[in-house]
Amino acid sequence: MDLFSLVMLALAPVVLVWLWLADVIRPGSMARLGSRRNAGHVPALGWLAAAIGLLLAQTLGASLALPLAVMAGPEGSAAYAAILGVGAYSAALIAAAGLVLFLDAPRAGTGHGATADDTTNRSAGLRGRASDLLIGPGLMLLILPVIQIVGIASALVYQWTSGRPVEPIAHDTLKLLVTSAASPWAWLLGVQAVVAAPIVEELIFRGLLQSAIARARLGRWAAVVLAAGAFAAMHTSVPIYALPGLFVLGVALGIAFERTGRIGVPIAMHAAFNAGNMAVALAMFGAPNT
Image 1 (cartoon, rainbow, N blue to C red):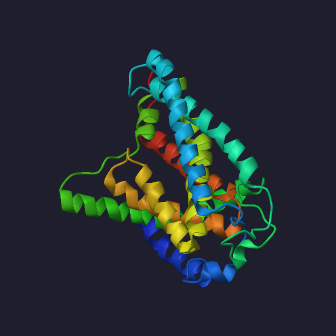
Image 2: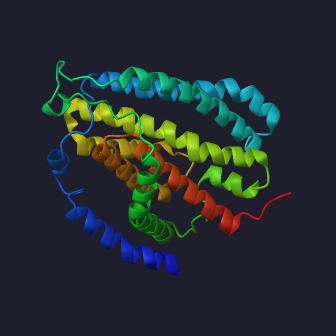
């Protein structure tokens, strides 16, 4: 085990103990905290429909961009992926802006099925503050040892059970960035991974899906865990051993959303996570191609 892994192994239990003592991850902590956002003005099916609509907008944008992507380069190239990403994220961000304006107005959740947590004049938490750009990376650094240890353990279990080595880079976008590091298309992909993807994915899985599950009376812990599971399952391009780490990341993002009541915090955490992975991959494997 290398030095980095040993450091993560030493820090992970410390982080978990601190989170437990700070009443962040203990059972009942969500109820003791109380609600910091108001999702009560939209029924569960409304939140779910918004999440599906945002996913469909992303898919439609990619479909519309497909002819341009084919002209830009062969399937699997940085140019092809970057153009598809421009279409997908442009459509999703436009749809997201409309959803935020419609769903996030502060109002009292006194409609049918509203709970005590809902009856506050707060927004749904689909916006952020400038301070989230500092809070998010800070929280990401805090939880990183736990995510890393889960990822290392999952990779070791995979190696022991399958007899096959793990890939040094597990994500297709990171592979394209490394193999085409000198290409402007690769850097466009990098911008999408660090800026657009965190915004769209956090709105879908935390802002909308997590709100739908919580609104369905399953509880906020169930909402965090189920949304994290959907988030991990959505990453079909990564190997199976990378999914537990993504699930833990999703849980951390969901807790951050509930504890702060602002989607800007998990967006900034997600962006920091993606940027860190990109920087490490390029530093270790990314000899620029010409």
